[in-house]
Image (cartoon, rainbow, N blue to C red; front, side, top):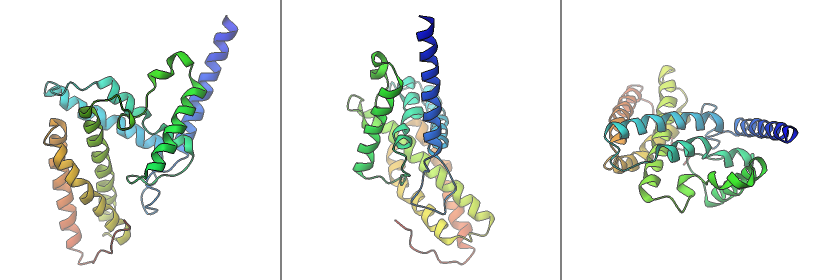
Length: 225
């Protein structure tokens, strides 16, 4: 019995290490080569911290939507395992349906390879892909992703501000990301207290950066997409 337990421990540790290495090996924002390097593991950890912050505000407001902290935090630390398992850099924030399907298949293969069969059902697909999750949780997850995209974009623009906005392609692309996601965030802040708490500061910082860029008298090229 002890030998079997030892073998399971070694196999699980090996599976965990392979998971981590696969996540470290896949780059986010691959369609923007001028963006700062960020792998999937770093992205997932940041998302978990953002979820923690958002959920804390929801709890402060009395959790009016009965959000499951366990389900959402679990999603945050597993939602892009499929990305890592495909081994292909993906174009966050824009993916096609085939990307999602490839990642879902890779996620299932990875779970089956590393976990006992009797607990595999407790490792579900991400919230936005899980048909059994209610709409309010899907909306909250959507808010998390949109806010994460904008946080990344504003940080990239803050870096550019330090150099006088010298990389115009980078500037154009990340102003576009911030603008593109704003409409969704404005809709979601009507529903979630946590999104309202974060959105105001995001809007203000985006406006400040736009004003700072305007003082350079440079003309932005069209964003890549």
